[in-house]
Structure formats: structure tokens, C-alpha cells
Image 1 (spheres, rainbow, N blue to C red):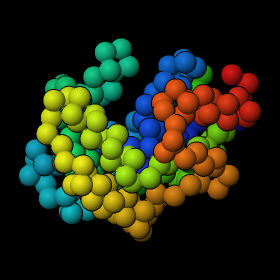
Image 2: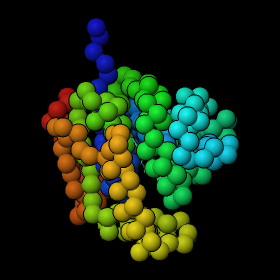
Image 3: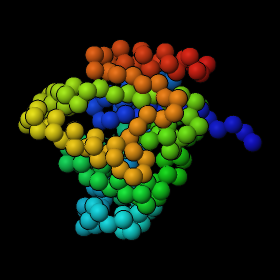
Length: 224
Ligand code: DC
């Protein structure tokens, strides 16, 4: 059997920097990129549009199987039924809604193959919570990025302020702690480092330092 294209799995809680790092790395390598969190965000968004409650497993799994979504690497747009919803799915509310639908086992099963379909040559950088544990357990490189809840809340706060949006640091810390708890304690694919994952605490690292660190880990395992 021909060998599957290589995968670099980058998991961790939100605000650990994994999304930015995964994207930079994918661009540097010229590899494909999977933002798996976006898929859960889109599903929650689509459910809300259709009036499907976020705790209705059967309806949500059905929607997940047939989600009319396209990712365009050319213009970085995410389209749901031809409408660009890239910005709509980036809000705090959308993240929380995503975390709720992501806790439903039937939803995760329905999205498994959709995520695996991103694996293509020359390789894939996959960003999420369960890339190394469930979706790509055979990933060549597994990295778990983390940072303290306070530092992650501070990063989110700065992002919101930069965008000219209102933000409350204490509320963000509470929100992040609640989401972490839900993601880490759910019954399927809870957020945790995969066996053999390299754990990197980014609390005291900026993005450039984090990318350099992950790049080093990748080069120790892959000839890229
Ligand atoms: O990475 P993110 O913030 O965009 O993810 C949004 C939510 O989706 C997150 O709270 C948990 C869930 N998620 C997941 O359960 N599994 C993934 N592979 C990615 C995201």
C-alpha cells in the first residue's frame, strides 16, 4: 500500500497559539492546512441558522454529514452554501457554541472522514484538539501547545481590543476556563496530549519563538 502523506498534528487549548503556528508552518512547508476548530464552529453556526438546538445529537450529526461547506486556500474564504462566513465564526459566542456541539460523540464521528480527507501530498499540518489522538493517530509529528489560562485570556483580550471590540479580561479568563473544562472532560476525544506528543508551554514565548521551537521538533522527525 502506498504510504499516506505525512501529517504534523498540532493540538492544544484555544489561545495557545496553535492556529497561528500551524498556519505559518503549513505556508513555510507548502503543505495543506486543516483548521478543525473551524469545522465545529461552522457546524454550530449552521445549526443556529436552521434553528437546530446545540444539544440535539441526531439532528446535529445529520447536519454534520451534509454540511455544505467549502474551504478556499486561494482567497482563505470559508463558505457555507456559497456565503463567506469566515468572520461570523470567529466570535467568542461562536467558539462557545462550537465547544458545545463538539462534545457530542455522534457529531465527532460524522466529521471524522471529512477531516481525514484533508490529508494530501506533500503533507498536512492539522490544528485542533484531537488531531494526534483520534483523527490522525499515525501522525509523523505530534505537538501539544499550551499556556496558562491567564496568558491565553490576555492574548484574546489584546486581539479583541486591536479589532476595536469591547473586551473584559476577567470575563475572558472565566470563559476560557469554562471552555477548557468542557473540552477536557467530555466523554469523547477530550483535550489531552497524544501519546508521544511533544508538549510546549508557550506562556513565555512569542509567536516567532513558538514557530522556531515547533519547526525544530518537526525537523528532528521529518526531512523537510
Ligand atoms: O480551535 P477553536 O477555538 O476554533 O475550536 C472551537 C471549539 O471546537 C473548541 O472549543 C473545541 C472544539 N474542537 C474540538 O472539539 N476538536 C477539534 N479538533 C477542534 C475544535
